[in-house]
Length: 196
Ligand SMILES: [Fe+2]
Ligand SMILES: [Fe+2]
Image 1 (spheres, protein in one colour):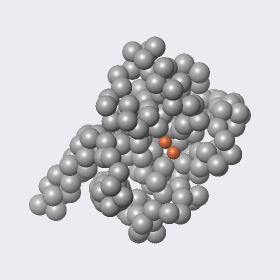
Image 2: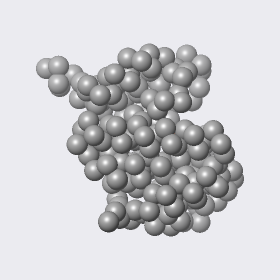
Image 3: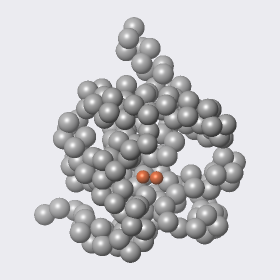
Image 4: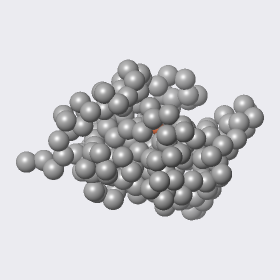
């Protein structure tokens, strides 16, 4: 008997997400399962995290800010400037309150899926990468290589995605969330240590 009622979650998500976001969500769930098989992680937990990672995505910005303030969830300057980033932290809150998830690993993976962080757990990495490579994605550069890399070396895949994201933001002159920079530096250091 499984701990989570994924069918029920899926049903609720269908009501709370727009059509594209729902399709993306199904792709992330599927990709989380595939990565969990590869890296020997709990399949059910990986799928629940994938299912719920964007559960707050379709809440209007003002409402997300209100939800965080009301529940004493810290909002950084970068999040105030780009409130869409808040769907990660708000999502972790909603996963707990509305979807009954108490598992801290799942909640953490939801909370850090937009920026990553230092010392990410295996599930954090699975969700972050699945979000980037799921089958509906088609615009990111080097997607084919990253899709392969994700199943070869999970840390190198993290490093490459973060690097591409920072390059993209710099090229477009867009604001860089300091947390993305922190994550990049963490994986950068890890890569150097590995390569010795
Ligand atoms: Fe997201
Ligand atoms: Fe997503």
